[in-house]
Length: 153
Ligand SMILES: Nc1ncnc2c1ncn2[C@@H]1O[C@H](COP(=O)(O)OP(=O)(O)OP(=O)(O)O)[C@@H](O)[C@H]1O
Ligand SMILES: [Mg+2]
Image (cartoon, rainbow, N blue to C red; front, side):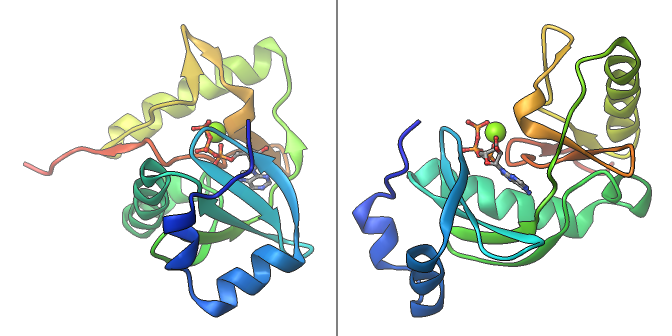
């Protein structure tokens, strides 16, 4: 996956974010965003393409709205703006084991119960490990830019 941010997106970023991009190394990259290692416990995700702007906005919104019992499974959002978001760095890979697969399917049901459709954490009932991490053995979602909030009745 390339690390190039579309020029039209980069141009509109604030000086602070541009400086962070220039002084940090890339820690990961997906279809929509480039992720920079900005400190010992934080990453900066920047949109490469317009859909990435939406994903960042969505993560900000979901993190704000999630109830505490599911929020503890979302990587913490510190700050965000147009095209960027600063998030807690979570390093421990998601294990390839039956136990964690089961726990993930259980967590999916929990998200749904709390009004969130957790899209992109499994594919054909298999964990999408790229979007998942662990902290203190707890499952943490690091990419929830495609989650959906169910409308309250
Ligand atoms: N909070 C985080 N802590 C550590 N690494 C991260 C974090 N968030 C993202 N990364 C790294 O950056 C990669 C890309 O991030 P992310 O999945 O959020 O981008 P994306 O463009 O939405 O991806 P996708 O292609 O899955 O839609 C991740 O797979 C991971 O390696
Ligand atoms: Mg991803």
